[in-house]
Length: 323
Image (cartoon, rainbow, N blue to C red; front, top):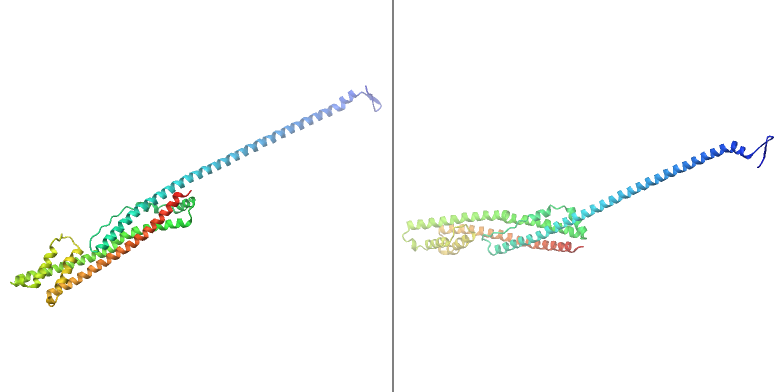
C-alpha cells in the first residue's frame, strides 16, 4: 500500500479518493450525464427537425405533383374541348359549303333562265342558311387557336374569315336585289305597262263601238278591221294573268307593225294608239334592261361565290389532313 506525506501526517489513497475525488467524480458524472442528455436532446430536436423538414418536403412535392397533375388534367380537358370545337367548326363549314353550293346552283339556274325570257315570271328556290349564321357566332380567338393547333398559318385563318363574311354578305344581298331593289322597280314598271295596256284597250274598244254605231260600212273600214283583229288576237288564248311579255308581243308590237303605215298616218285614234304603244315599248325596254342587269350581276356574284367555296374546301382539306 502506498503512503503519502501531507502536512506532517500520513494518509492512505483510499481516504484521499473518498474525501477529494468522490465529489469531483460526482460532478463529472453529473456533467457527463448532462452533456449526454443535452446531446440526446439536441439529437432528438435535430431528428425531429429533419423529420419535420422531410414531411414538409414530401408535402411540397405532393402539392407540386398535385398541381402538375391538375395542370395536366386541365390541359387534357382543354385539348378535348378544343378538339370538340374543331369538330363543330369543320362540320359547320362543310355544311355551309354544301348548302351554299346548292343555293348558288339555284341562283345560277334562275339567272340563266331569266336571261332567256326577260319579261317572263321566274321564281327562285331558296335554302335555309341558318348554319352560316351559327358559323358567324363562333369565337374568332377560338378559331385561331384551333388553326394554330392544326399548324395552319395566319393566311388560312384570314382567308377563312374572309370567305365566311363574303358568303354572309352575298346571300343577304342577292335576295334583297331580287325581291327589293330590282323587284320593286320592275313591279312599278309592270304596273305602268298594265296601265298603258288598259288605256290602249279602252281606246280600241271605244273606237270599235263608235264606228259600229255610226258607220254602217264599218266592216269595210280598214282601220276598224285592223284594230278589231288586234283586240281579238290579244284576247285569244289569254289566261287573264298580268304578263308584260304577252302585252308586248300581242298588243304593243301589233299596234306598231299594223298601224304605223302611211294609210293611217293622219288618223287621230291611230296616232293615240301609237303614242301609247311607244310608251309601252319604252317601259318594256326598261324592264328588260333592269332584269338583264340583275341577272348579269347575279352571275358575277355566283362566280365569286364559287371561288370563295373553293377556298373554304381547301382549308377544310388542310384541317382534315393536319396532324
